[in-house]
Amino acid sequence: MSTASFLLRNVTVVDGTGAEPVPGQAVVVEGRRIAWIGPDGQAPSTAPESVVDGGGRTVLPGLINCHVHLTADGAPDLFAQVAGDTVPVATLRAARSAVVTLQSGVTTVRDCGAADDIVVELAKEIARGAVPGPRVQAAGRVITMTGGHGHFIGREADGPDEVRKATRAEIKSGAAVIKVMATGGVLTPGVSPTQTALLPEELAVVAQEAHNSGRRVTTHAIGRAGIANALSAGIDSVEHGFYLDDELLDLAVDQGTFLVPTMLAVDGIIRNGLARGIPAWVVDKAEREAQQQRTSFAAAVASGMRIAAGTDAGTPFNAHGDLAQELALMVEHGLTAMQALVAATSSAAENLGMATEIGTLEVGKLADLIVVDGDPVTDITATGRVVLVVKDGVVHRDGLAGTGAAVPTA
Ligand SMILES: [Zn+2]
Image 1: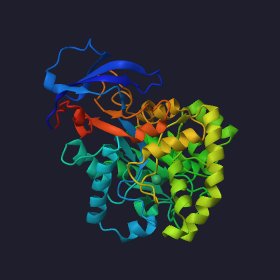
Image 2 (image 1 turned 135 degrees about the vertical axis):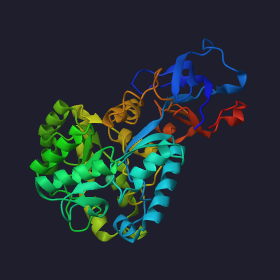
Image 3 (image 1 turned 90 degrees about the horizontal axis):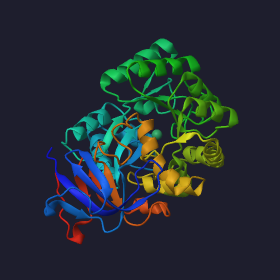
């Protein structure tokens, strides 16, 4: 992959740490990394053809979506889509999702489960520059009990020995993170979101094997008992988390566990419903949990539990590239816009164990950055108005060309 160097000038820097915006700044990208950040006009001299005028817009770290399913595209019935898929069709869909995601300003995703090794392999192809897409931390197949949530994209395993083997098998297949199911879920027939799934001793084995291999482990957990089981097992992050209460939140805060709320997932089902072809058993489950999700999210915000942004893109009417809508929902339900930006940048990077490389605008970090129209600190929807996307120092979207500035491309 070719790399380039350029100066992005005349921008307000929102660095992803939660620090106040700094207007009148410039950023120098050299190769894959950020080489310099400082006041506009004091930047090291650069060839004029590699100067990009940001027009006073805001530069942010590339956004991070901690929960997507690249092989799915928001069809009304996810279970039926996967059941009808062939590997080539699902692979093409994943490649398309990756392009849409990157163009939206999301430069890193965690894929929380896909059949076969599709996303593990796609992640490698993106990393070597063969196809465009965000950096992908892929979970591969989920680890689930027999008949449990997501079994159609998972390895079914029961008892500590089988669960240990399933976790090791995913690591062998190339999973960069382990995803395990602690409760039932909305999109799998025959299970309830509030029932427990793998037992505490099984979850502990998954966490032990993941951590032993240097990987982080996240869990799908909706009901209270399953969340409690996951926290006691030492899981690093909780997806959805609809039944957090004071006792669980105390434990989560103590352990530094992340919550990935995925508010858009329930929203997509409820807003579209039976009329758009979502199965009745899915709509029923989502409607039963919607209020509890909001209550739980508000409690998590108040508790100080660490929150990382994720959409669950690929679930019904939950399209790839819509992270800005999730951030808007999080603001609607209690985060400040700055907290939502942190949830999608530095906190998300920590949740993925990648904070030394991405998640903030800092000299020496990978040059993942976006420029947006408007002020995202006062209007979070500005994150949906992306005009420039740079990943690994390579420009993937150039909406600033109209300013007359030249932008080097890969
Ligand atoms: Zn999911």
